[in-house]
Image (cartoon, one colour):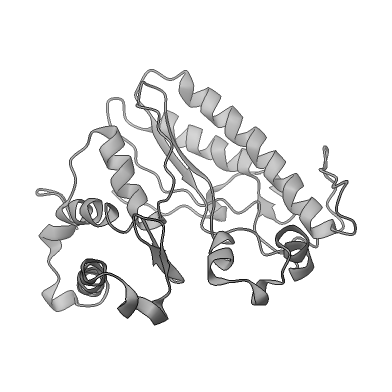
Length: 254
């Protein structure tokens, strides 16, 4: 049974600024794991809030703050980096917990964009104001690290480019689980278009295309984009004609 948990489901959580800390968030995950029925599986999609912008809370005091030494007058950046340090510590504790459990555990960990910091911060580190960046450099602002971790042996690999739309497929494939027809479609598309976003896409050779110059791309790439748009529309909007069996494994509920 699907269930949605919110801030109201936390009892006396540790708050960082006004948000539930990653520490308390991960303790809730561990509690849900311990409460599940023996022998059953547990699938969670967890969104943390500790590091959400804005980074201008002057009242919160960090126990171990990060201080920048080569860029002056960057209080927002220092606050963000202090929050990330806390996240690193909480993540380490959570992985140590699941490393010791008897059942196989697989965790995909990712973000969706870099922090919203003042423009002058990005000018210091990238040499240009955000509005002045080339498309290639602007894409870097949405480049974030990710990892897939397991408490059992999985093959280690380094992936140069991948976008969030492919992560569920990569996770299922890593776990050795069956893929839906949609995930198989994404797996094939990934071979030619390893990264795609609202700002554009990369081909396998590392060429970047914006949506305004799609007609300059190879015909095969254009065909992938056309098919992807059709599949997206069918799933998101075309409820009357939705091909449900394309998006779910046979025998699973909607």
